[in-house]
Length: 85
Image 1 (spheres, rainbow, N blue to C red):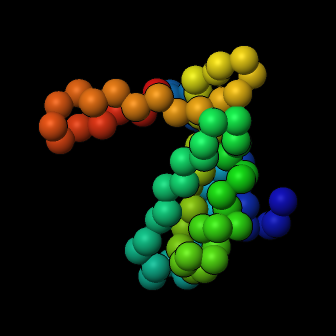
Image 2: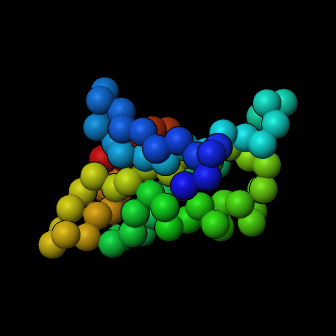
């Protein structure tokens, strides 16, 4: 793990995640990377770096577990709100 990478667990939401700050504080872009079934919070970080190298990256680990394969489950609350569990 490089010196600018911070791996944290949020006790409020219960998500294990990886956060990498932006290369420059004036950069206002944060990429939210959601892995697929069986992945983890580290899988898409190289892709995020390729897409926007200087952006901050927030990559949570899926909380839904199916036979030890983690993934995100999306619930549509209304036409404007998508909630990930």
